[in-house]
Image (tube, rainbow, N blue to C red):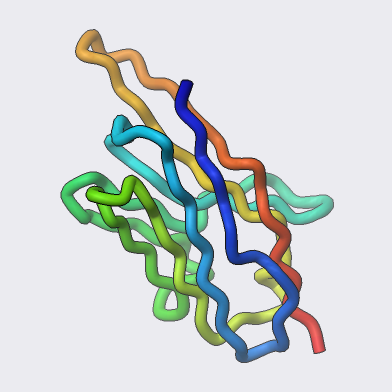
Length: 118
């Protein structure tokens, strides 16, 4: 059994910062990332990172968010700066496990609410 446990969500004012953490119980994910889902909108990829450190960001968060990964701790982080009301959403941690035969599986954290409001 592999679990992804998120922490760090909450309420913050516009322009503020938060850091999300996602700890995996085992080190099996070739890619880890963060998705978000806001009411009335489609799920979108915020950022992801490979086990070697290559990163990818949504255009809407480039320059404000930073994703990082500590392979020794099986943990991925999302540092969110200059937060905007548009960032309000439930954020989900994601891990992709690929078998030797090339089949990929998605694992998900429980979700954490980020609310940016004055």
